[in-house]
Image 1 (cartoon, one colour):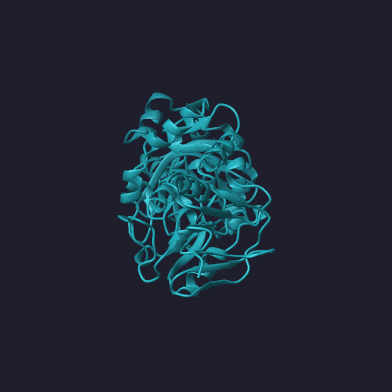
Image 2: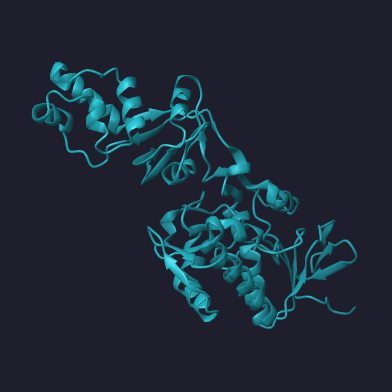
Length: 392
């Protein structure tokens, strides 16, 4: 029997799949990279407002969510943000740090896709685009994958098809269906880095659509200090996207609208400016429309001089721990990534290979490893793709 024409078939030409294919190809492996779309890296192209927030210099395992918080340590430690930056610089791509360690292309996100395609060409990777996958089989020694015009085989198969976030780009739950067919467990997928929606009495805040402020947002034990944005449906902005990954249905989130305030700050404001109002006091640090809405919700519209200290203390406490109970999120359609996915309990942290299914690997967003906003998920894609490539 003649040997399979490929050493590895990689399903999904997104960030993780491109990286894995390029590295494996340059290691001398015969690689076929398959995608149902007509171009690779579609999610890369739209990321970071078209400039691709391609990594974060503060990458560390504690910035990732997973049922096993230690799982990502191996891959992230072996292929770092500095390694990817070096690759970017070798290709002459100019970049800059925006905030909080987030690195972006000076030009276009398409430069990152072109770089990865170039790396695949160096590794002589065969790219099969516009190729939806049909039946997949495994006879114990090789995997067979039915493509539109042929059936291909290889001893190793890599699942790099991501999760269902942003379905307009063709995202589906294919990775989970395939994993389950091979007996791998799947941690319930859910939208992450996603705007949250408000209903009922809290829907009154929709009148603030377009207003943003720097706050500390909290969900469970997680808290993030960044901008929050009121929308016509609820809450968004970096702070909200961050806590959305930790939020669970029917649980509240907390917002500290005055994160720099000292204890007793409102009583001090009363002593120094007794004729002022809460609205004018808040407007010193918050947008005027938000200051007005908060003062009205607290029913404190008169002069501070006429308000008892106890009420002012109560108001200050509420402003530092305002509770919203979202009635949902904007779902996978608006989620930047998917939390949950193929269980890390069934994968090797070293090789991303299934423990009980030799030759089957899963990488990137398809796996139950989800990073913070700000380039962390791309770094997981690069690192997990690189780690799996070492074993192909």
